[in-house]
Image (cartoon, rainbow, N blue to C red; front, side, top):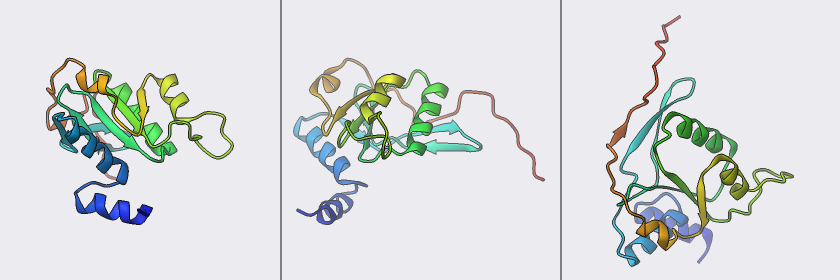
Length: 153
């Protein structure tokens, strides 16, 4: 199948990428309970934003799938980790050995290790599926810091 046809099938099945569709099929094959894009996490940037993770496993682990891991995504995930330190967010990359940018010595995997994120390539490892825990996430996780009121100019 071509990349275009893989994406078309993924979108037809309600996913945003071929990797997300592949992960969902794997989870169904493993008979693992999961939710897809079912929660929103509020975080603060220059304004308040929400982040919708790709998968929430039955044990509460949040899975974000990434083909490309661009600078804005990396900055967003560092801010979310700082603002919501109790969330267990993990990455599944198409290839964790990809460079952060052209000419970089660092890879996606090295970035995750440096910043304390767990990651894997192409599938969710079985030990993540078997970890104890419960999905107690609210459908909307509010920013827990002090909100700054911004006035109109």
